Length: 341
Image 1 (spheres, one colour):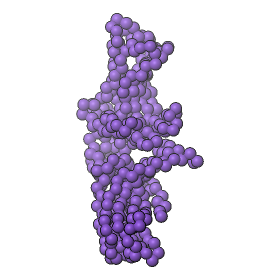
Image 2 (cartoon, rainbow, N blue to C red):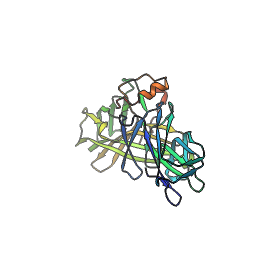
Image 3 (spheres, rainbow, N blue to C red):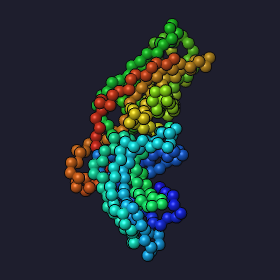
Image 4 (cartoon, one colour):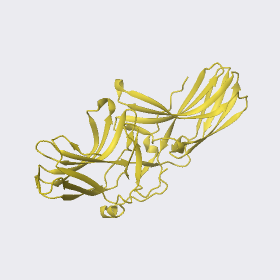
């Protein structure tokens, strides 16, 4: 990210280098303009440390300042309220007291075992980001440098979780039963299911399953829902007959999904639904919707590292069911070596 200057010109360049960044994993996240950005990847409880380098533009000159500090910030930005950044994490380290710089300088920093409770996220109406911000406080205008990082949150659910069984029907015309193998899926999982036609008296010509992402921002009368169809999967083309069953197999790894998020800092939620759509020969559409939980999984489980020094070394639609409580899962701190799914 470029330096932000509000004065008449820059007198120094600031660079933030993270410890162990040569071996640290990176991850992609969508920017506001839809393009992908790649940043270094961290997990909850992991130390964030490194070095701040300040290079004077003109050798022999002096840079007077009122202090130099670095902040670790986690914030939520709602696009309809851009002036306000809602900070849920804010840590500050003083790098230098007021004085002057007469030569290039560097400062070490360390935020030990930082809490990073939420996953980095960029959506239709909200953005959650983590960043390091260096500020050289000056009398007229501060000199600021920011560096984003990405945080992934990992959860672990039992391999056997509740399957979903539902019925959809129109009296004396249509009776369908469908079943999905579970209600919680990791990001690279496969949705396996079956649809049973118990009664068919209308001429169905097409059936598909959709994954709907619903982003909810705000609260009360200011609540806003943004629905996005992430995936469409045709499961039948042609008329079914009574007693027929159709298998479903939908691979999630091919789609851009995030974990489900429930009431993040009381600002937003992200929920996913499986939507069964039937279309008859008169182009009438029938729907049945069911909420699922999507989570990010780690295959390697690491014990939390207790010692800070060690840390440095390892540098008609049915109402969806209520969102499952987060207590059904437990979070793991895998650190950088974890393999995600």
